[in-house]
Length: 144
Image (cartoon, rainbow, N blue to C red; front, side, top):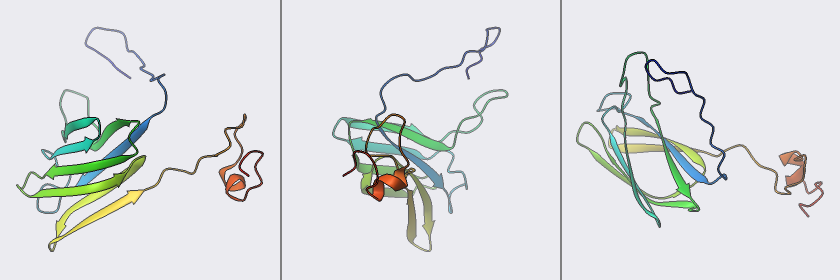
């Protein structure tokens, strides 16, 4: 939903093809808890992308603290660099696509990285889609 001053509200809907993605949620321990001000740099074969964590940019609006990167056809992230507001730096490599990662800043010298897989998908592409558990059990029409 997009609403500009003295303009009608608009609903934006992405109708492009589904591609790969990665989401990153940062939790600061030495920095502020929401990691506001952290800068993330992500590298794939297509090049570099940069995001910065912001909060409260305008009157009656907000931004997600989850950083979303579109990866196109890339199935892995080669490198993810995080510059925390406290001045610390974190470098991660070889992250799988199509996941949301929760990265908790340094706690007693250790970095916590939690990756969540998306919900399982049907492999058969049948219409209507069958149940993913049936596919894994090989009871699906085309999963054989």
